[in-house]
Length: 316
Ligand code: NDP
Image (cartoon, rainbow, N blue to C red):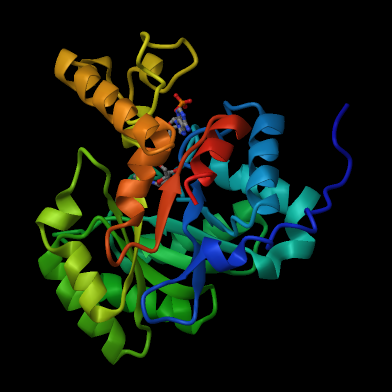
């Protein structure tokens, strides 16, 4: 039977003292575990399962939901799912939620549906708000650096988006260090301080550490949120006994089976051993490694079930 109306758990903030961290030197607190909607919330995914996962998240104090214009598939459909959830369940809780979206990768045909022009960012955010049935998002990101567009154009679009109230804060994702340094200064000088940097950080992909991005964020009081913290599921028990048919790897799209080398399996088995010794699950061990890095605000996990999300959340 379809769940009729959602009432959030009265206990959702019981663990607040442990759960939230200040995002850089801003006024915003974010949960140490946030929920990403890149996979498992699209038009191809069972809506009731997506719904259940978001309920579990919110019921346990996960207030931050991360989207992008092209999450799905098809493109836009994760935001449509979010819009449906807002209408059905979350509208009364809007002020308790921190919702982000992004633009920067391919979204629609023609010269204005990709990269970092003002034309693209402005139109994309308008579309995102319509799909999510929202008046504003809490956070809008430039999803990637565009080397062809003047960096000032991209950044001024972020400034103006915040100024006109369509987003409360601006974020940067995947930018290399050099333009990030410029962005931090530009945004600060235009009174829209950079809230947060979103980068891929996990035990087997430590680029933001190696390239000094995390250090820069820490120094400047910018929050840092780690995406794909489980390397899309590799750093869990998911692939220890083959490739499950319902797994991301079985789709051979974003996570290829070629990643599952004997060395990688060995690495995961060792991680599992370390986890057991520490009284954690494999996923928790991988998440914990990120959360102890100084300057990290949150790990942005994906989950295809409530069970996975519960496991991840128990790292705290
Ligand atoms: P993860 O590394 O957390 O991978 C999530 C996948 O790992 C799940 O779909 C599931 O795979 C598996 N998994 C999760 N928890 C467990 C568990 N406890 N036990 C076993 N398997 C588990 O993150 P994502 O790659 O999904 O990225 C998270 C979010 O980060 C995205 O939703 C998005 O918001 C953001 N992101 C941002 C990017 C950017 O460019 N800014 C790029 C990529 C992501 P399965 O589906 O097989 O069950």
